[in-house]
Image (tube, rainbow, N blue to C red; front, side, top):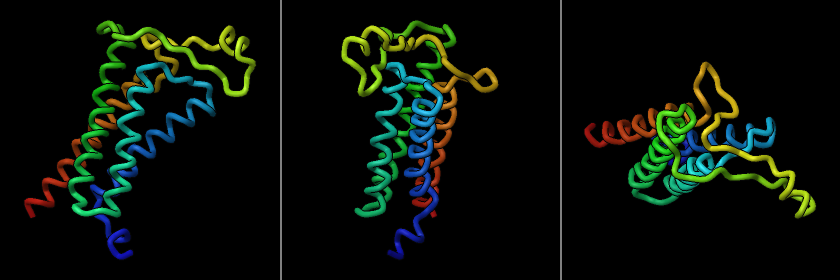
Length: 157
C-alpha cells in the first residue's frame, strides 16, 4: 500500500494522462455527439494500452519498464493525432476511408440508413483553431516525452 501512495510523478502521469484524454474523448462522443472517425479510434487504442501499462506499473515490478511502455503508447497516440490533424488541415491526404457510427439499440436497417457519416478529413470541433486530433497530438506528445524524461532523470539520480 505504501508503494501506491508514494508513486513517483511519472507513474501517476502514465496512468492519468491517457485516462483523462480517453475521458475527454468519450465525453465528446456521448455528451456532445462528436462521433469518432476511424483515425480517432486509432488514437484511442494506444491510450487503452497506456492505461493497462500504467495500472500494471502499480502492481508489478520493475515499475519503470511499465511506465516507459505507457509513455511510448501515449507518444504513439500523439503521433497518430499529429497525422490525423494534418489530414484535417489538408496538409496531406489520409490513408483511410470515412467511417460511420451506428447508434446502439436502433433497428439495424434504420441504423445503417441513418448513421451519421464521420469524415476523417473534417474536424467536427476545434478550440483556438486546433482540432481534437491536434490537441491530442500536443498533449500526448508533450506528456509522453515528459514521462520519459522523468524516468530518465530518476535513473540518473
